[in-house]
Image (cartoon, rainbow over all chains, first blue to last red):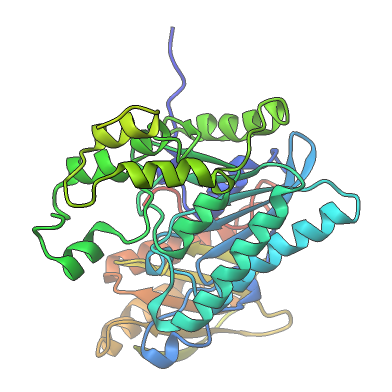
Length: 281
Length: 112
């Protein structure tokens, strides 16, 4: 018996990722590359812009229900959020809020492949990220907001917070999630603090397997397009039966974990797993 | 960043917009927009690497001498080699000539 060849989801670019998560034939792009709504700031700083500014906004259906699926293109400027790409994300999520309010249940899936703010447009990117955060929190009251972090870039900075705000986060082993990226920490705090070339150590700390083990992500999935699509559908098929309070509302548990960690020591990834499941160091 | 604009005479009609590639290290993006009723291919190129005008013109001259579509070509380059540029141009042409009813109108070119 032959097994169909797996299609690694990480080898799909943003547009194909969005298409893969929507019901076949329903993908309709808002502000596609032909609209040429590109960054007005990059060319002035000598950087070649991209026609879609690195953000793909897809409308369609998931299991027949209206949906918006948005994706950041990690290949362009590290998936960084600029004025245009940020506005595309924020507006499409706000439109989903309006659709839900006006009686059209609309699902929201966010594919995060981003280093966070695009530094060339820092203030405008920050503003957009705050709008994205607000929209995610508001969307949660209508149903699960699903985040997907598969790599290869990972998800960092203000968009790491966006991932934390989702109702349900799907990751692969190769996906990484954190606030400051390893290279930034090494640059700012020195190699004694963190060796960013220690790949095994980095993934053990902020990789998908660890994030799921310590309850900061919900589903660990293989790097396979069908598996990721199935994981997204599963969230909606099992909701609300499996609904639990969103991660970001479990403040007491977060406080307990913070209080248990000794910042003068060096807790290992295993220590953090033990602590987050109620054990002690 | 350098900007280069060139026009070529063209006759073949483009029926729908085409998009290939990405502004990603060693790669480029090509956006083709139809120009109904026109008779030229207008190329607007932006490249992250300055000073390669002559090579760009040679690569583009060769391509458009053989297959110019009546369209506005927007090329956003992030350090692609001439070979890569030729491959993306050929890919865009292939998609432009596909049956519009056969499938998707844009592609990001699969794996990277």
